[in-house]
Length: 339
Image 1 (cartoon, rainbow, N blue to C red):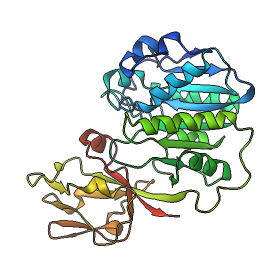
Image 2 (image 1 turned 90 degrees about the vertical axis):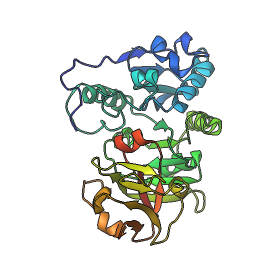
Image 3 (image 1 turned 180 degrees about the vertical axis):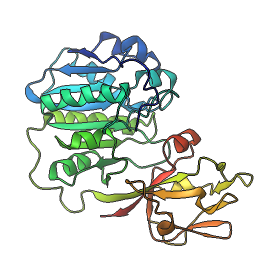
Image 4 (image 1 turned 180 degrees about the horizontal axis):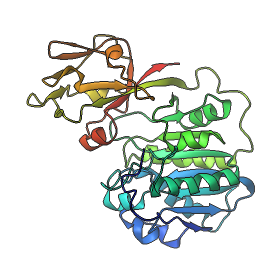
């Protein structure tokens, strides 16, 4: 994907070897006074190979900011048990309280091959990480819909699965979208994305801080995967998107696509075939299913009988959201099946 602002100049990447004093007690709205640009923070610890923590890829997700602040409070003076490198991402979007600005790409969709200043930015980040040979990578996110806490992995290796299990008893294996930070980092170290519930969920903040602290104290990962029953693992099959030409709403009979009001309650629920999802006045493909290669799998997953759109096979959705901006910018949800 080419950058949406490919004609702009390079994106600055600041670097520092200490936590800024201004981070102590700060709030997300203060971000540009602390980090005017995307920043790499490298903190020397007792063990050399660093834990890599990625923050602020989405500006409306605040948990990673509070994890960053907590780490600053703990390790501004005292060295951590393991070296620590943190990438502070889309600071401009966080200042505005949005996922990304209109002239920016999604900061978690630019970690594969591509051209333009934002791809150049993350290329610098990846090159720095490869040189450091990270012990592990943790990317911290929130959901816009109602979801349990869960960890996402991109490789079914013991260390990656151990990372996910250290965070929560639910895990997701995905390869779509293929342009995320964790997929890029999984090519050279164990990597996990942690989904910490909605922004402001204190339990999610505490869990993310606890995971970082636990990994900082690890000397090595177990050679075996987590014991059976430790984590319930799902595999992402495809994403569900809405035709950009079709209006949509939840329990809105005037919309071209009228999604059921309680759809968000289905997250991480094993749904049987013939579950009602929506009614449509738009064409049948108003609700589409697309795999990681862009192939249309709608006919495999949904059927349209009259105006009703129903599931064609058992499936488990995740990340269903009512946030219209997120739905348009990303997707309605992902479809999974248990591994």
